[in-house]
Length: 397
Image (cartoon, rainbow, N blue to C red; front, top):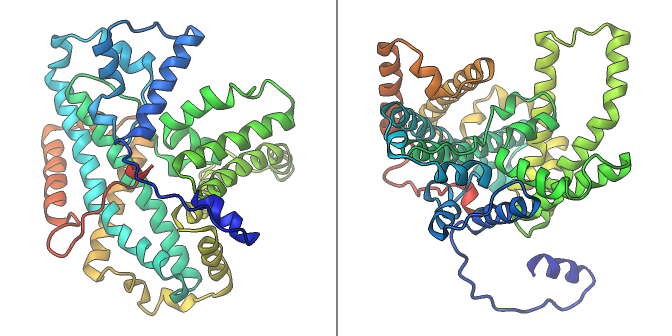
């Protein structure tokens, strides 16, 4: 209704006054999609109907993932609940792996996400105080914040479920190493993107239709994704941007292939792949501006200042230390980001999660890493006196 009133105001029509007194159930956005996916899978014959009400209730309300996902499928979690056994659940190796996964999630949230959130909040709260490099710094900070914040929750949910003997859908696969926006969505919020693909995009015809109808299906799917995050024009623009990105990628792919062939570009080289990853991150981070902004007007103002007020001197005059964090906090953040990059790089190259990679290492090295992570969370976690604890970003969706 707020969004409709914004449109009505443009035409000088009196707003619709409605007093809302609605208590939203916790996690409604996530377990609704879980339940819908189950119904559609049963209808399509891809999943067997569950006749045990308690087992079905456990599947829909499984507590590690009920607040912010991942959005589970009956073909995964419900099947495990049917085949559950005490011997399989109480497995020492699984419990240790689960705790390691949760520990890395705590590190991402406490040491990185909540600390870098100060920079993002400062720039988006007063964009008029900054120029190009300051606003780019703020946008990149938010891109890192939302990745660390949401992936941390997903890791804690995956780890908690693993200690109980269940494997949830992996929600992130080093998304910022993606070399196209299409690949980014195969690595980001995997449970939501695959849900939208299977139940919205494919149901509309997917790619089994004309090219322009396929493009329409892509655009609608991502706009639905935006609306799922919130009934705000900012989310709709964010979703539309990602749809447009993917349409442009499909249209430009043959042209880029011809250019590469003509220039004899070594597409398998590190430099070429690195440039594609940077370009993808830039496009994704540009869209995050709309996701973070309170309104489309604020987002457009942010972008206008980012392109019009170049402040190259800010890279050298120490003003980068004026975004809400002091020098010591910035250094702690940089160390945390270095740890994140190393872990993501190992996961990207070896295609193994941190728990699997650590359990293959020498026991002394493994324990040193775990102790450092625990100490890092306790000593360098962004909490304590004067700190207002930040909830997980995705709890609002």
